[in-house]
Image (tube, rainbow, N blue to C red):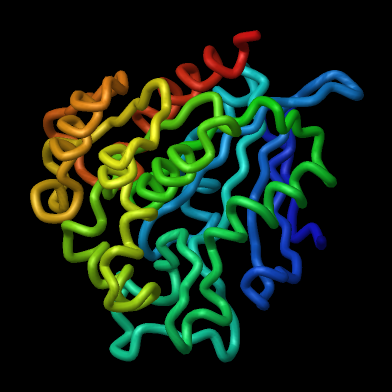
Length: 280
């Protein structure tokens, strides 16, 4: 692991790191904010998964999370959204919603993407091990959150690893990728034509098939241009209601899909996670 940069902020350190990934067979970059803490202390970890077109840098530079993380004693880890580098296949037409910047947090099975696009393994296995070995992380206290495609990732990772994460939240998540154009394009391209293989990467489908978490927090902008066609939070609300999962779904008039929206409510999400991470 190589440190790319380190900057002091609110008494902590925002670092950017790169390493050779065995999952993606590429170099991967991620950021970690380590808040001020006592020597030898272990810190709870919040994972933040980003959306389409993003890298680790979007939330790192625009998320406005460091003051809250410093006050609450939270480490925040922000991975990239896809493999990158020479030879990594992309969408043949250069579209933004597939390929580079759009890994959808799955392990691809379709050629030529199956060599590098193994973001599920990277996020759930390789990077957590790297964080545990190199940072003052209390891996017994983890939470996960994300935005848009990253909201999809956070929900599916939490639903499939309910014993690992104390809490899960999302901004503007793609809750049912099997039912919307973004998700259908990605899942078909990465996982193939057999739609039965898609359900394990669909939060609504997972809940309907019995996956459970105790509660979910979602914030959604009412002026989000992707709300009706791609995001469909009503599908998550219906699934959670039927399953008895406590969903807090906040719809905010006037807010869109951008980091202006995310940064507005970031502190509320971090406080929500901190409260659950502090429980015995």
